[in-house]
Length: 493
Image 1: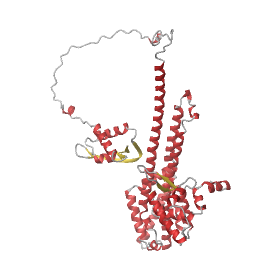
Image 2: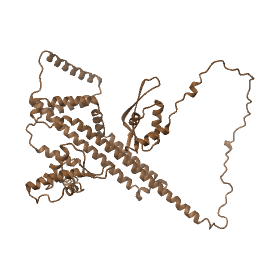
Image 3: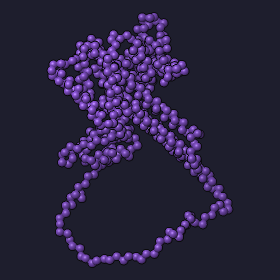
Image 4: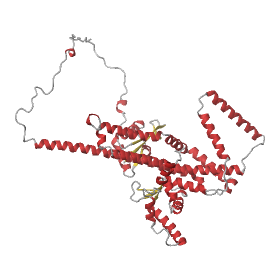
């Protein structure tokens, strides 16, 4: 986006981050939200807890600056910051909760990050960033190379460099990073870790914006302009609407941002990667040069903060998908209700005209249905073929046949499985197939697993997550361990 005058003027008037920086209460808003959300890495907070924290801050400011400053209550300030003309907080009601909650908006987090960058740093490193640029460019070039010979030459060159370094270490030449290089790299790690946390909130906001636009389009679908479908029906308009809705949902998931987030999440969910990252952070914090920087201790568990933020984003996306499906079901129910009203009106008119039948010949039909016989449809004559029956006496079989297999059949009680699903959904809003199998292990192996999947396919509320895999294990009749990997199946109340 070019930073010309019209663009900057529009941002100054409409962007929440610019409005925050231009606000006379910017020091209060920025300092409070930074300490309440970013320092402890809180994703959302109940209204009562946030009001209590803000009341403590206002009490301290009034004590030091005078009673006249900030005369409004904490609840009024929070509602004002969450209003549409501000947009610094997002006020919402979580599922199964009647208490309002607040969360930072991505624009506010960007403003806080920019304000944090204004503070003077004791040490500004450039070497690590330059090396990062070189490494990224090298990955781009090597990863895009399609010539096998070129890739082999590059790998051999890299192997020769590693062999040379191994020989130098064996010879006693082992270069180590000095304190300046260690501080430089650690500062870049800390900055990148904080930026990743803010990216989660922006990804979540993108999905909310998509959900809001979809709801608006569904609500406006019944407008007269959508009734100009072919043959006077609206099915074409509705089909195009649904294609567009689910096309946008797939476009978000398949976009560069969606694929990058999915790759990041898969990488982070690896237990081996988590252990490696924990070990590296522990070793890095033990270095004397890093301790001299007095680093934030929360950075030791930043990967757990990533997991928490990522799980919150995943739950938000799943909740939005479930709400969208319910919204579409409500629209279908309203359409069916409209059809039933029309049919009821027709029945009412018919009953009103039952006693006032028309006089004279109202309608005459020769037959109930027209009879059409084409000449070419008549079959040609073909003489019947007389079967030849050979007289032969059937003899009793002399071999003993094992008949136990006819009676040893596996019967899976699907009604019992459905009862387990209903019992579990009374305790929680949704449950996965893997959790159900853990509570009720498979007794009939693969046949019982197929019965579970059949029940899932028959329920419209069941969610099949193709991008997430789940393993189900059982013991066969010989006592051997069997395992099946399938998409995650979630039964929803």
